[in-house]
Image (cartoon, rainbow, N blue to C red):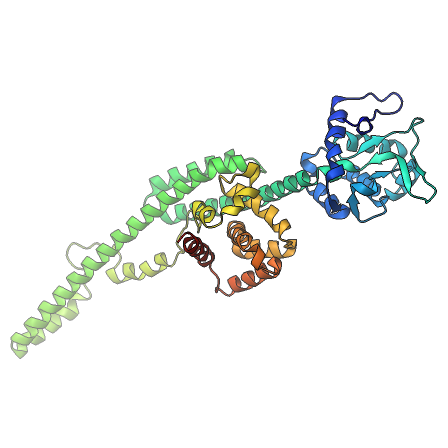
Length: 429
């Protein structure tokens, strides 16, 4: 092992096992390539919630990166910056020196930077006769380069979790709204079950926290979905019952009219006049066995189209495309899931975020696709694009074109999956 990899802090600061682990892991940065420092910084900002750093600490990191002379971090050029506290305070908009020291210590503990302290604790660099830096003492940015892939994966996972949580919250809100309105629709016909369903829905709503987590929504959403299905089934049975009753009354009316017409054709003229007179008189008298409070048959049938006009309720857990079909048509997407696996839609959204960055798709194009197609369909499209990445010149432009076609109802993701399956079958054959 190279003894120059591990350094101890100056003064009374003690060495810890965590600092040693970060120094050893950053040694791999010597063999790494190069990465744009500002893109890497934005990735770290996106993953900050799991890195244990605050926005003020990231402001100090931003200042440290500004002292690195090149745009791309490259181990061959040296990754140590050596600004004084006064210079760092200026680039952090006048941050106090004590606050600056505290945030520098936070960055070191989080494993984002390393201390390369000089014998006297000062930060400086020794240059050769040509002016090149031979040895520098200050803050080493090597952990950023060595952990770039880790930061990118963590940022992708957090972004996928954010989108998945937003999608689940929307489904929960829609399901609660549908249940409430279906209960109101069922109440006049079956008040007992309507009251029971309303109490059940309120109990589920009361158990939700103000900002429910993914696990909480995944536990309660199927309960509301089952309640919604039961309400829908009862309303469908109610419609069938009303349709049957309306048809029976209409058939009875046709039979009575047919008998009257037959009698009017076979009887003499004077008897026909008597029948017509009795028919006119019967319109002012209720039929035998019908109460005055009963609605007429024609009024009841006129209400049926209004009840049918309600849009069909779709359970929020139903997806347009089964996940096993997506993975069968696009097997390469599995490699970008958490731990190289995709077990559910949440894992697919995480993999799609990684693939989005790898294919160079801009956040605007990706967000527009998610708003138009939905997060799950967008992830499916990206999985298909990954299979044909070598044949696509610009994945971002391709995704924008598919989004535009989807807005005009001229695009279906099932066609892409079918094409992938046919291509796989032709290769096997």
